Picture (cartoon, rainbow, N blue to C red):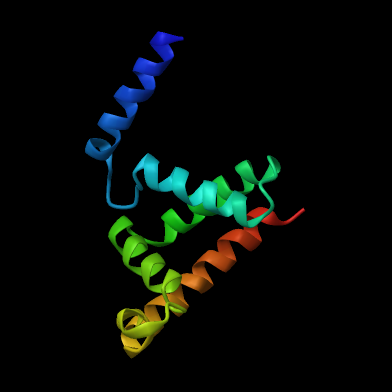
Length: 113
């Protein structure tokens, strides 16, 4: 058991060092999968489907593009003055819309029967 925990810790420490242009850090992949699973009722079957979706997204976007686009998309509905940074600029709207299309396509490809 301790050996497995050590391996996981080592992988977590080393994963950012091993990232390539189209590779995402493990923690970001896990966060995506957990949120995706939560959005689909927390069903175990979505572990695989959501993992597939983030893999497809990673094929379409570089990590930095993913961070920018997913943040823009997530905060499109943020109210108030602070949300205006994500809501109002046309370039941010375009990035968010593009990310949503990529995410929808990835989920559609992976959630199909």
